[in-house]
Amino acid sequence: MIDVKLLQKNFDETARALMRKKVSAETIGELKSANEILKSAKLSYETLQAKQNELSKLFGQYKKEGKSTDDLKIEVDANKITLNELLETQRNAEEALDAIIMRIPNIPDTDVPDGEDEESNVELRKVLTPPTFSFTPKEHWELAEQNGWIDFERGVKLAKSRFSVVSGMGARLERALINFMLDFNRERGFQEFSVPMLVNRHALEGTGQLPKFEDDLFKVEEEELYLIPTAEVPLTNLYQDEILASTDLPIKMTGYTSCFRKEAGSGGRDVRGMIRQHQFHKVELVAITTQEQSDAVFDEMVACASDLLSALGLPHRLVTLCTGDLGFGAARTVDLEVWLPGQNTYREISSVSNTRDFQARRAKIRYKEEGKNILAHTLNGSSLAVGRTMVAIMENFQQEDGSIVIPAALQKYL
RNA sequence: GGGUCACUGGCAGAGUGGUCGAUUGCACCGGUCUUGAAAACCGGCGAGGGUUAUACCUCCCAAGGUUCAAAUCCUUGGUGGCCCGCCA
Image 1 (tube, rainbow, N blue to C red):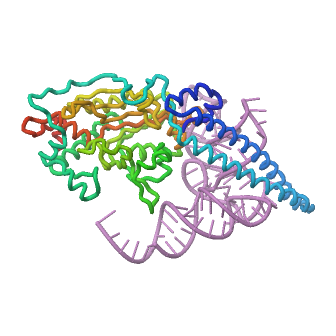
Image 2: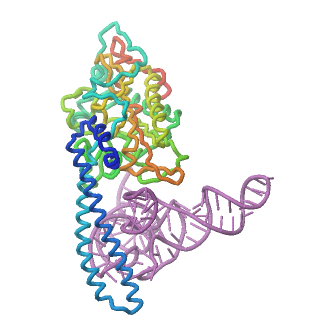
Image 3: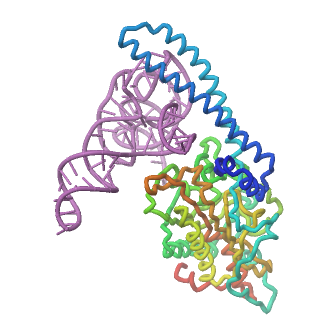
């Protein structure tokens, strides 16, 4: 959630920044006026409330002194009717503002490049050189089936399309990767957590998935719980509604979870293979920092994910997302794209974002500094998406006969 | 799942209809004293909104309700303890 006061204080600049994220001038105008309506509704309500409190105190005093309270009661009763009306007005104004602001994306950092879509993303650097092959490299689904690692058909039988079954060496590799990633992150100072994979609505509002992206989430109807789309949700919300000591920051966390996404709107894309599944494994990094620390921690997280790929010997590149490709809550994002020889292209395998105080404002994550409560900055990044890492290992380390060489770094985990 | 008791500021714990946003202790912060520290003493110390700053409004698990007035009474929900039942 953005800070409405920014619109109040600095309308032009804030409006321009929001328009970079395709928020219409109309919506911005509605937001501003909704806020003004709420402010004036509050003022009238609170003024009358103050008067009512005053009269109520008098009531007690009169009783004590044995004075008649008849006249007082008439006045108080009359006020009460108006008060209820004003309260209703205020509540409506609150709801109206909420309905708008909860759907407004974060303001991008000023140095984030403008652009419509991924075409305008800016490559920062490439790491490791893509391998060359004396044969035509295959795509991962072919390799996966040939090696008996993944069974796409039986996954569909158990659930529906975009579910798969991993078995044998594939299953062991998956488990090895998770352990390798967690250990790697822990050595970089990220504390390991194991968290619920079902969360309530409040948590999802805290990190910004709700109310706007309800269609992307699996929901357990009768329990009012949702399957998490990423560990970012439980990890970030661990500190929801808390005031931390600034000396406790930064808090750096890592955790492995399954992730569940409906992939609504991605129909037809990546239907084959395990690039885009409804359920996938991911090791996540989340940090809660002071406002001053977040840029440095962001760089640490990008480096952590990139070094992890390097440790596995996977060629990749780092890309700064342009405004059009930036997620809802992110002020800036660097994507890590791994080289896939079978597809002859780089594909996203990690995404590291700084949301600044966007999530913290909604989730009420603050820290105390010199007696003041300050909104924290929250950051998240994958390190890494396990399924996509397996895809990358298969395609990069495939041999002519279709067998796959497991990276040395993983040997001790198998 | 059933019963029962509870839920108050970082923690402990008073407060059972009015002057209570809340006694007190611990913790924490500042000061005096001390070479320094401890102890002792003095002062400060919950959160959100609002204001240049005050005022002022809201919050005693949550949402409703009763009342001129609710931390306090009622209803529903949540969470926790204990007892019973069931189950990896």
